[in-house]
Length: 164
Image (cartoon, helix red, strand yellow):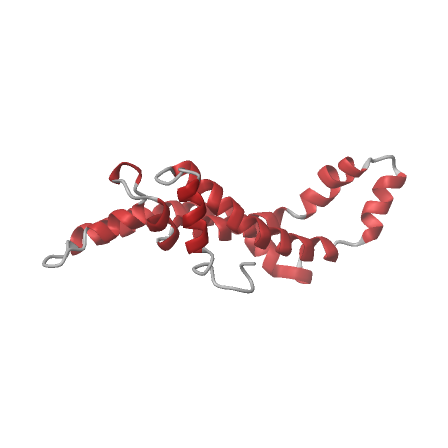
């Protein structure tokens, strides 16, 4: 669904549903919405990656006595580490900096996320640029740390057939 229509379109029905369920103003609701949003795209990308893994590898593992779960956990997942890291990083960045979804779901200041906190520093008569820049730097630090931690997997994913 996220590939065919913009995320903003199902936001109104989502708000109505969450309001009827009386689960607005909760970080748990935000986590569930992000999970529901990123799972279809992640599965779509992983299926494409799984199709590129040669069937001979899984057949050889089955001949050696691996069950279907054994093939998945011992063969397919280690081969898919690069793709899993890329998808995880994409989902994290997508959720970390999202503003529209969070402002739709969260109203009270007690559960604000950092993008909402940045927006609150901008007023009609005064904008606290130094605080905005400081908070922007603080927000970017976890993303940079996670990227540096996953960089070796991302480089291997982009290398393709050039690996030595």
